[in-house]
Image: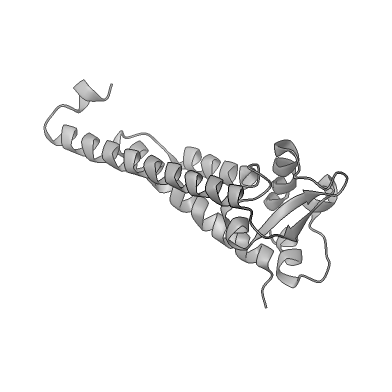
Length: 163
């Protein structure tokens, strides 16, 4: 069976892709070359995904979080980013997540962190609900902006509204 860490990573990967779609639509609507911007945002999302309380949305769903081996607490955001930078090396860093045989990921080894299972506290649940609400609001604002950009371009007002 696949490891919970791998399932959490796959969830985070798809979330980062879908979170970029509204940005891509806006950049496309204003006719900006967006290939490098979107790729940068996707990598940034994957690198920074664990910075908030040592867990990403995928880890939240799978009831996992990251612990610093030295302190027993959530690692600093900097450690979380360094830990996730090793995703660049590709398949070699995913093998420990798939096998789950006590093999440590390179990022975990470098930052002296590990992933543990947790029971969510009430406060953490409330914070995650608020984050989901903020994300949904962000998506709604982006979609409204796209519709206004399209409508204004059809009415010949694009240059007036979006300069």
